[in-house]
Length: 336
Image (cartoon, rainbow, N blue to C red; front, side, top):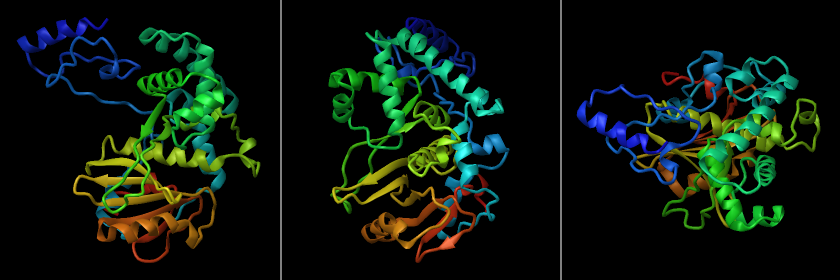
């Protein structure tokens, strides 16, 4: 009921006390078409992501603030978790209902019901989609390529759907908080950077389910666990940015020479934290290739480069370069 906003605007203008109206929904309000008024200066938008690991564990979730504050001196406890533990967390995701269900089979039922209701009800309430089955096919493909580049032409060709249809469906999935685009990062010092965004599945558990990943499948050497853990890490960073004291934005970097960095946190002053994600329990110097490239290009603008991996120790790899266990995301604190 978009016209409801005009009545709310009238009420707020007459009595501007904050907190009189709470508007909740499963779609990004300001992205809806035919909205008569966006209530500029009269409203505040709070996006609720699925639960973070810190919220589930009741820990600090202070990685972003700690990284900018401490740089390469950031310290985290030796992790008690191993690769299988991290994969299980990624498969579980952060939807409260999924977190509360004790087995993968029961979580799978929730994910299937959730996505079916979302496509057949919520999406169709905000837009006419000709064939819901095509959107489901698209979503399965997107989840199979989670944390990859969102190249619309490739998706269109692989699915046999018109490019405009694919683009509209991806926009709708973004509107209802299923996927999120992470913009490409570039600066004057990195002019060969490409501009294609990376596609993040908002909940790694849902993404894993739609990609056909199960606890048993992740033990297969051919299973795409690297993209799953990358999506998991980027999602945790995106959650933290909604409450961190440090105002920063999340990007990814890739250039025409295929040098890439999975995640880049940049604050308003232009200083940068670089983040690589590795699914292995060991780290090699070559894993820092993209981060070292950034260090050469940016100089002192790069505060630190971290490789987050499935091992247990914090390891130095040269000036400003550190390997950290993935648990640093929810065990690091700003005063570490």
